[in-house]
Image 1 (cartoon, helix red, strand yellow):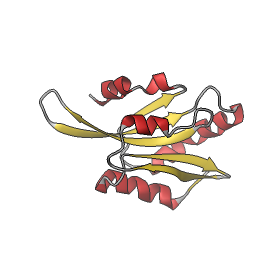
Image 2: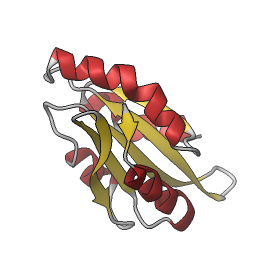
Image 3: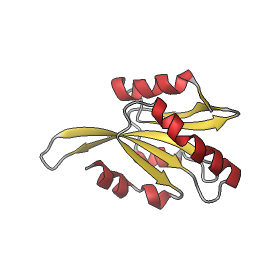
Image 4: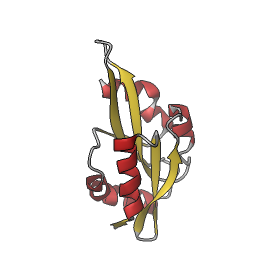
Length: 130
């Protein structure tokens, strides 16, 4: 599975310049391409709303939070979105390509697998960030 250069470039912009709050990626043909970009002002609800209910996606989300010591922090989440309603073949392709794609994105701090929105609720994201 090839990874389009644009995927790595957009990820670097999210990580270093914080140009985006989130990026979703999809597999088209035999390569991973950028699907959607979320502006820095985007909310977590906008991010989850951008994921299709019946198709798999990879996504990265830049989560800002304040620690108990009142420090501003940020963690980059990698989310493998594989809804139950997506086609079996699609789930298999995304599952088998995930690790290779994730290795291309240097700087992922937390990984999540989700098959429905409850598995990536905001509370779960907060819990995994601390």
